[in-house]
Length: 228
Length: 228
Image (cartoon, rainbow over all chains, first blue to last red):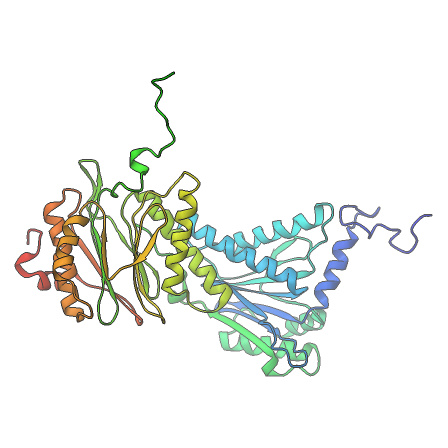
């Protein structure tokens, strides 16, 4: 008996295209990301801000939404938390390996590419499922430039100025489109990030929003202690 | 066939019972913390390979390491430890205590020793953490002991002679600086692979301070071993 329904069974494996050229499992992975709480990354010449909603269940102490990767940049993800931890660990290890090998801080784009390569592997290898998360990497690059990268669940990668992922991300993006400007100060960026989250869905208070920021200043440019 | 000698032993330079060649490094504990000192000469047999070698390395807020032996092995271990310490602090949200750093280094060196590829280094790991003061003396076999004072490198017999005669528990910082500098001076005077300059670090729970050259000259007075 042939599989029925709109996807005709082509959604059963991430290692198979549908006749119109889609990998439907990666689209489902995007839906998994949208089930996660909202995560935002913004940048201007003044710096970079990451912000997200922490979900609290009963008496549980909520997980931190934002994870530091190295001195100069952090990560925030929306989606399946276990998959997120995998990429965060990977990012931290890659950042340290870069410092050991080259004696300089890692480019954020280099780490983002490593993560995207890793996420991509999960879309090609048999027996694996695509990661159910989107991940934003943001901070000061090796040269002190504010930088944000977005890693898609399927292993795609883009550099961006402002991004919202997670539940109600389309509403948040609409809000950002009408309020984000490239010349905002760091304080204004933080305010905008919080307002975007509060506008995306009801009932989110300031206590539930975790924020991380870094100012683009001479003293924040990352360095590595040399052995010689 | 009878004259073939058995080869189931390390070559002499990897034999852990042989002293580590080149360099003198000294460390001792005093009332408020620990001191660690080293010379600046890198030797290659009877040649001075560099008169400005850096043998003291800051690993964490209150932990430093001195290196003696194969420079490449030692520099790699410094970078490896820094990476491990950074990952520890990112993953656990607390500083890595000196005791753990010491045991980690010993584990890494023991693992290599048992794989027949030992790191040819004689490090001293000195530091202060919430639990206590540590002067860890180590060798390529991965052994670790916490000593009141120790010295490694080719000049260590000369330094240890001075330390045995002059060391007391709970010295003041001033007394301790004098003792450690006299010990290093003795090695600089008598050992051909030790010389060219002096580095000295003061390690307390508050952090690490480098002692500047003028102060070293003042403490040693007419016993300063180099031409003024």
